[in-house]
Image (cartoon, rainbow over all chains, first blue to last red; front, top):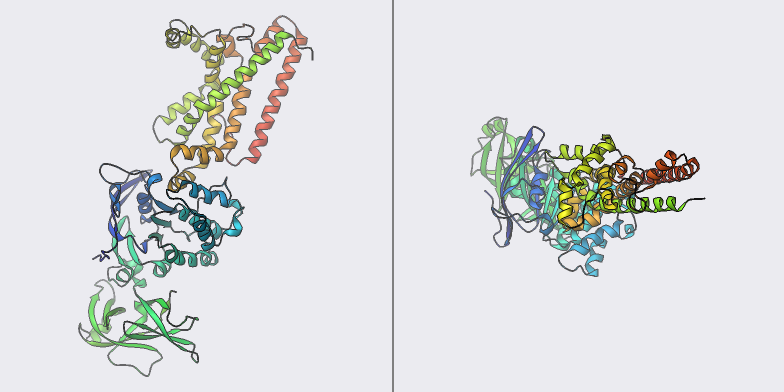
Length: 368
Length: 231
């Protein structure tokens, strides 16, 4: 089910680890191939093994067995296990883990001195500027706010010049306002440094906003993995995430409507109205359409408050045999969009694969 | 102050002994402390107990066993004779060995506590920043556990200065070689030279007070320095 861009070197992780704490044993069993470009999110509830998977990749979990390859480099197989200090990763811990005996500058230099590549002054300045921590250089970690600590930790991880950046819920310990202090930097990092990122989160919101690829874990096992849209539009989402089922698309802003404070965006030949948040024309935005916000109609309901109505064909209907709902995939000129409707409606309207149908989109979230 | 030559020799010898023992203990105590702080091995309990033994054992018992071990028929004695350094009882180096055992817990435990307080987290962070184990030891563990190391050095030094029983057992009473301050005071009291005993006792009291004062003022400032002895 995983479709991977074969042009870029992949990360192969076939890992097994069993962790003991007291009488409890936690088993992690992951088989995954994911692209070493863009942002790969590891999503799951707490206790699903997200952090353990990251620790296995970083070499911090000693009990791990299996195979781990980053492109051509093997970090783990039957014969050897490359120690953490020789793996070229930048690891951002959930709790920042700055060294308390060093100030911010000292923490950053700790990485600079140990990088396998020389870190040019220009690069140092660039990182410091990107995370906006220039004014904090002389501060000790205990003088920093949570968001500042996390930004310094990210800078420190970048300054080791890693081949891959690993982030373990870097926003989890921050309140909402502080999250907004860090989130924009994360989104920008990927573009600035073109570094593959592994991002652990339990927040579907963060994941939808940042990730290109998703691995969904549940009780130590991979439930579903693939591109962000494949995962979120899948009928196989575990029960707790079913309400998050959605279509994630990229659209281009093509027209502004000053009078109604709206903008028009285009994706694969379809037009959609969005609220005007000062997006400039020509910009590409990521949109999320939650499946339960999409309803279906046999004809174009012009006398309706719903602005976005698109004509398509039913490509697939998947019934939730244990529940009241069904997931309908609608093909709109090269793009598929999912709608969550009741099984009763499907029966009442005699919906079938191949039928022409109007999708009505009640709301669209703009993810930036 | 009216110190006799014999007093000054005893003081000098005591300082030399305590200094030697402290340096050696910091070198051998640190790996033991770090191992104890990190290991999950079943040996942790027994080793911890052995390290702490001198806290509860009468110094005469420790001294007695060491005397036997370092004697001509003991394992240490046979080893030292084979190495051509002769027998160690009633020599300065015999005293050093005795003191190493006797002061071991006072050096190991503060370091162990400080390293335990640091925990695994900064060490993992260091490893992800390409820091190899020795690099991490010198640039993360030592600076973070500095108050623990200072406590260990002060306690190791002060405790060696204050020992008596074990010196009596394996050191005897040889001027310039094994006659430390505590023995000198004992001699003076035996010989009813109370004035001399007063002088040296007052010096010991002052020294011990200052050592402990230093220790506790470091603890107030230090982060990971909680000194708990006899856990």
